[in-house]
Length: 411
Ligand SMILES: Cc1cc2nc3c(=O)[nH]c(=O)nc-3n(C[C@H](O)[C@H](O)[C@H](O)COP(=O)(O)OP(=O)(O)OC[C@H]3O[C@@H](n4cnc5c(N)ncnc54)[C@H](O)[C@@H]3O)c2cc1C
Image 1 (tube, rainbow, N blue to C red):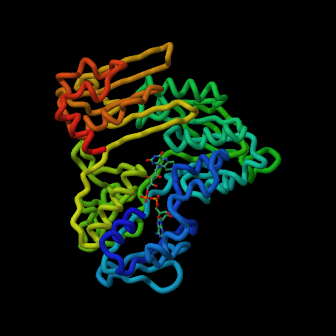
Image 2: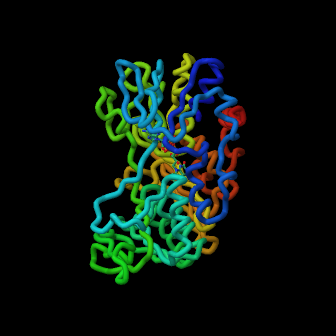
């Protein structure tokens, strides 16, 4: 969608064909948990008007799957109908849930949770299901857990690592959210995974429970596998498009094959903090990368300035912002500023190297994090005002006037 909008900014008439396996209009994928919890309906999840395809003059082949690309003939073969030819191609196929081989996982009440149809299927199961095991306590695992709790299910989250949300939080902030989730009635098991899914005694086709690696059994009616998303790069598998974990792109979002671009969760794009390309499966970055690809496809030169890891959460009503490096292995390589107010349940941590902010985690008091992100993104040396960074009154006024001006100009 970012690409289509960018192309139409530059070129009002060139033919655009969109191929999308999902039949529905453009919707907010992060909101599928709210659909299940009942906090949102599909209309609220729509990100654009229903007339979008028409108003942007797009030939939208929704409900079609691209099955192969012939790079030399510039043709995309579909699962049905005629192939589509192209002058420029954008591959924005996103990610797919990673489902490991688990004995007994072929039962139909073992689900994943990444699409609208996954959410609708889960919703249909909630008429009868009373309990669930969620495998994986990352962003998707915690978001589906919250939805299930809202729908009155008894939920157990099983996480292989020692603490939940471990890719974006440190132990302390993780423990804070873990306490809130446990208070909401969820059982959290860490350091374990599911080695087997078993059936119900009365009907072995139905999910009856899981057996953990330590041998414990947890009874449940549903299992949701939420252990991660991997780039959906199958379309370029037999082509000369270069890939690593995702499709490799330059700052114009072009692959190594001319006229072929990639963006979003399927692409490894630039991370300005670590100064390398890597997978960063985040909604705003996917949109921005698509936009940059679109401009370049339409002939307007645009460069992607890069993104970095960033999360803004409000699971179980606990606001958390984290970005950059949040829980490094080599802690002694960083200067770490921490403020922890047990009573107010506030936790603030900033990581610096050479007086430059490289990471942040704020829990329950997330004001001003926008300023910190600006400081990180622009690698601002904060030495002169470092002592005030975690003070309650820290704000734009603490910054040198030249920097303040820059921030105002960007707003
Ligand atoms: C439950 C959940 C919660 C999330 N929460 C957040 C959040 O809070 N914040 C955040 O920043 N990010 C979040 N994300 C991640 C975010 O949704 C993704 O980063 C973003 O959707 C990626 O956009 P994309 O366009 O690259 O891929 P996608 O949104 O995955 O879109 C790819 C589309 O391509 C289609 N497709 C794939 N292969 C083919 C093919 N061969 N032929 C035709 N069509 C095909 C797919 O069906 C899909 O419709 C969440 C994701 C999930 C699943």
